Image (cartoon, rainbow, N blue to C red):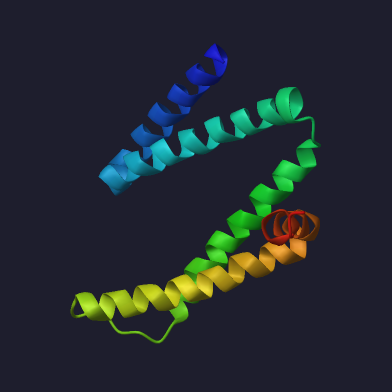
Length: 130
């Protein structure tokens, strides 16, 4: 884990330094996000190999699917026919609509790509206990 921490710091400093010049503080945030993503992937791979005993491709598939969901939600939210919110109520209405669309996208992706897991979870939650 020491080497992983060193890599995280190197990525954070390098990406932040490069992007700071062009994007300012947003570049530093992107650098922090990049380092966090790398560290999260390292934790996931370690957990899969040493603790969970499941195939690595299963975790990679989930990352790819939900990363795609993030972009689909972002695109869908930006395509909704709303104007710039003028007050708190209009912002809340817009947020509810974006949340509903995002919920549908994520649930459909879960059903399509993780059907067995969703069925197992459904049975655990709603199955009658004897």
